[in-house]
Image (cartoon, rainbow, N blue to C red):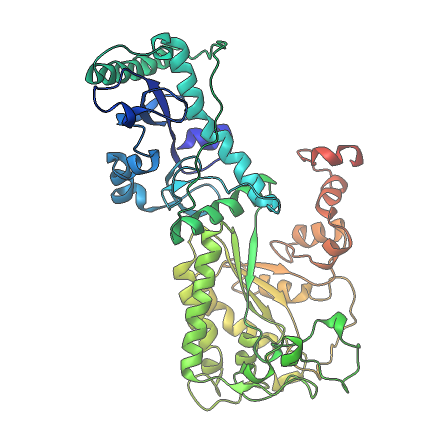
Length: 504
């Protein structure tokens, strides 16, 4: 499998498989069975090839009337892959969870252990085009192997005037001799001028659900990581802030107009839920208090999102428990007035986040970082969530296997009052407080908030105020900020996209 990853950047490939026609003398009385679309009599040689262009499995002798896809479904290799250790999930370099599989062309049905290209169409996405490009590079090995074999053993180019059984034996022997040539170092690809009839291959549109999901996972993996990037995803439930219009569709500071989207505008104001029926502000919709059944359903749905994130190849996952969304609302006594096991005391208010984090850590691979974003202080004084509460929560998150605390603040109360001016790095002290606590060496912290310059970000790391820096707005202003920052900080090993080389 590593051969295809090294040569083509394509992971978890057991081999490339396809079929070719070998011209024969048909058995008497069955001539029509062996007459193919190229207008001669032949048998099908179905083969799997590794990255070294060696045949790892062959099936020879089926007549033309047997479609290659139907031969494969009865192939021993099919059952080996379906029912052996190969069917189990693998974790590769980027920790994307996918199945080991064979590659094939369009005549085969798509499923979890047989992946093929997307059908060509005008509106293909860039990710799909990238996937097709990488897969075609890897899949070309089987076509090259067939070409090398036919160039070495030219008897295959002409009609084999033998009994069918003998022709099949000769073809199998040639495949073995081809492998011996590769092992001995003769892997030249001769360029013979051989004429052949170009014909359009039939296409199979059949696919299984898991096959489609796995192909999509490979598609996302190949596109994101082909750009030399790691990918993170943040998962959240909006709680009482759901069904809200985007900020640019609201008038800043004007609470006379509803902040929520109506049903006519595509919203769902009657279905918004929260720990308690308390709106975020007077112009927000009044949420319904979540039932215990809804809380359980929320946890189940959240874990499904975690599993999909893993399958799609994301490298980092963050649970968003900040800024007044659902999990924040459960944490804070200002928004959580419940009388059951999820409300009241500190232990009850943090219960949902801890239960969810435990489930996420079980579903999210231990080899991938797990982050939790917290509003370390709610900015409403002692009646709300404070930094002391955050320090009380952190050891429980550490025990559950959380790797990073994303240290943000506010967002849960419309009456919040920031005690410090909004200046660059205004939230860094939250991260610094954790690093200076007894938990500072047990978990990483990631300060965030108006970090806009390369030197500023680097200073935070060098002064050990945090372990990594999170940025957002600066990327909106300048998508190329990482490249510029790296240059400014003297990073030597830096790869710019070829199209931007002159901008260095």
